[in-house]
Each structure stands twice: as C-alpha cells, then as structure tokens.
Image 1 (spheres, rainbow, N blue to C red):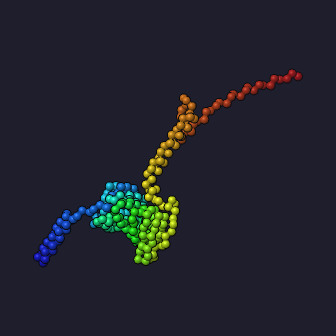
Image 2 (cartoon, helix red, strand yellow):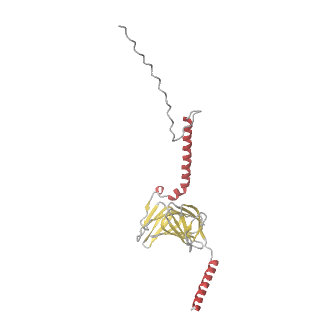
Image 3 (cartoon, rainbow, N blue to C red):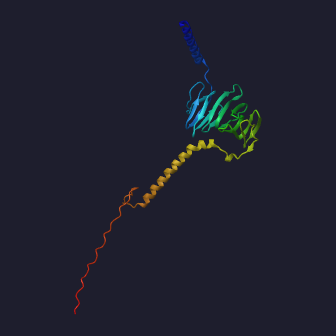
Length: 269
C-alpha cells in the first residue's frame, strides 16, 4: 500500500515538473492587436487564465476572449493597422491568426456588435473571417458592421468594399450600402439597400462622446458666467449683492399721525 502511494505521489511530481518545464519553454503568444481605448467595464479572458479587467495598452492575442458590459466601448488596433471596435454588451474572441503571406485572423462574435475597418495594402493579401452563431463573413479591404442579437440573428452592413456572407444553406455578396440578416437555420437573406447616413454608426458616436461631454461642460460654465454678469448689472454700486434664498425684510414706513379732533364750540342762543 505504501509502495503504491509513493508511486502515485512520484508520478504527480513528475507530471507537475514536466508541465512546468513546458510552460517555461512554451513559445510566447504573438500579439494580434492592442487595446487603444477602453471605456466602461470590459474584461479579457486569456487562454487558461481567469477573466480580468481590460486596460488601455493591453496586447490581445490568439485565443483571447473579450467581453464588454453595459455602457462600455473598446477600440483595438491590429498589427497591420486594421481597426476593431466593440460596442456594449458584446462577446468577442480572436480564434486564430493566419500565418505566412496571407495576413489576417478569424474572429467570433457570440452576441453584441462590432465594427471592423481593414486597410488595403499593395501586394499584401489580407484575409479576415468573422463568425457568428448563424453565418460566416469574409472580409477584405472593407468597412463592415456586425450585429448579433440574443436569438442569434446576425445583421451585416457594409460601409465600403465588399464582403461575402455565407452558411451551409447559401451565400450572398454585399457591397457598399448593402445589408443582410441571417436567422438561425436559414440562408442569408437577399441584400437590401440601407441609407448609411441614417445607419447606426455607433462607433463614431462613441468616439465623439468624450468631446461632447466636454462641450456641455464648457457650455455650462458659459451660462454661469452670463448669470453672474446679469446680477452685476442689476446691482447698483455700493449696494449689497442679494444673497440667494434669503428674502429681504420689507421696510416699515410709520403712518402719519392723525390730525387733532377739535371740540365743537357752543353756539350762542
């Protein structure tokens, strides 16, 4: 019995040693993108690790999963300068990276909304694939928005370039101003034309949000200064400035004394 116990303990020790050595000499993960903007609550779950808060400057690599909470926004810049933006309530992951001459990655959006802008380079072939619960989108030199709701219905909108959206039941090609929706167990719907200026460019609004807040702050300060100038004009020199919330006591003016009542003189008979 003691011999068997010793063998078991020795086996575990060897396994832990080998695992530790492999971890020490394992090839470091190659970064695919870096977080350049994080607002609100966003988390990153790296392969084999617990979830932690995503911060600006954090490198994101193959196998990493990102999740944004309500009101959050994340902007990633890839090593090839491509841009990825994640809206609130989004679950996004980097599944694989394509090695060799064909640069690119495969992403997954389980739920939520992402925007991707891929820049074209002469002589460079880029391949990006965005996978959702109901379809796969092939992206090349494109601006595309992907929106997945709770039921898995995926909407793809193209702002520039061309993409192909497909699943086991069919495929459609989208060009600028086209949109398709893909429902569970259904082929991609025929493309429809949408007005991009009325589209949900949430990504642009998100980037402008801090400046809008600053503008409102400055407007508030201007209004305060205007009110102060008005009060200065209404107050005469030498007069005390009225204190807000304190009513001034009314000046009591004494009534003039009543004239004396003359006694009637007796009339002569």
